[in-house]
Image 1 (cartoon, rainbow, N blue to C red):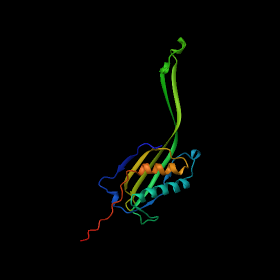
Image 2 (cartoon, helix red, strand yellow):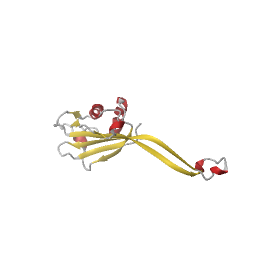
Image 3 (spheres, rainbow, N blue to C red):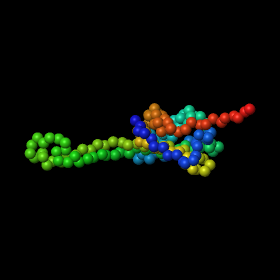
Image 4 (cartoon, helix red, strand yellow):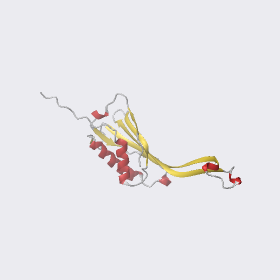
Length: 167
């Protein structure tokens, strides 16, 4: 369902010291005629999944501009075709002399989907943390979206609790 996600962090920034976050409407880049889910429905499901994962890591969701972090996403799906010419015989024995010079080839059609989640400082708009990977997310299946967001945010740091230095 999901491959590994690549993570990019801003140097010398510890995102675990932030407390609050909000979720911005992301971008769905699947061609309109190939979409299986509306942008509004995707936003609702992505927001729910992102809030669940961030709250499990100790961050607090606020739905306004008082948030310290803003989380957004880009997702989409595209049809691709792989093909390859295997050359003469194409790894298949020739049954007649006429088959010896015949080239063999193959092709397959498939969908490739991507998910990128960005975490930025809301005040400065500086990107602090980003993850991206290929997945299957153009479905309206809530469990698929939840598991993809879980996998994408698995390595996002847990929030550091403030330590009271009481005597």
